[in-house]
Length: 153
Image (tube, rainbow, N blue to C red; front, side, top):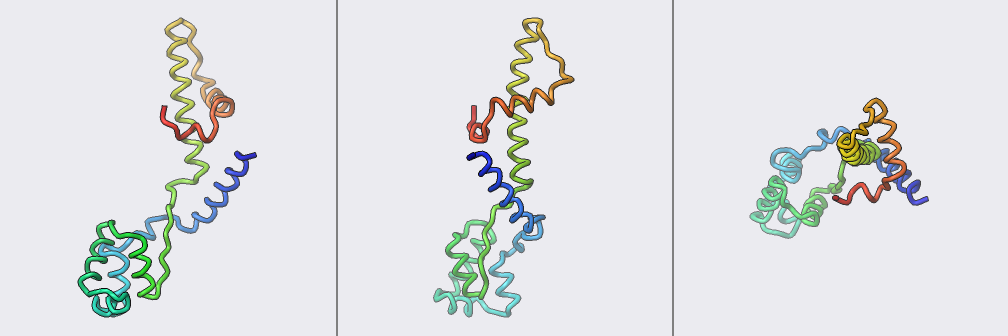
């Protein structure tokens, strides 16, 4: 039943994350969100510093660290609150979670089946490639579990 529960969880996450597609729509501005929002609000670095109870030089350092991708989440959260914003943090998969899992399983199954096919060819017992897809699906069903997909062998 654990497998079914994980499958339902993947489906729910895929549905929730679909709203964030395409992820390109959420790329940070070149100078970062803090600077873009501050500028759009007409707020100076000194004014943001007062709201955050930090020095203006620290605001500049925060903006630079966000633009370079080294800012800490708690610092970004504090800046968001000072700008009357909510920090939203998400990892957005490039494809659905189900597709990622299926692709990984297929890759492992194909690697293993090709290894077996090579050995069989050496022994003059080659297999027909026409039935490769059903063999891949059978291997995934019979030999792989979701947990096996992520251990490097």
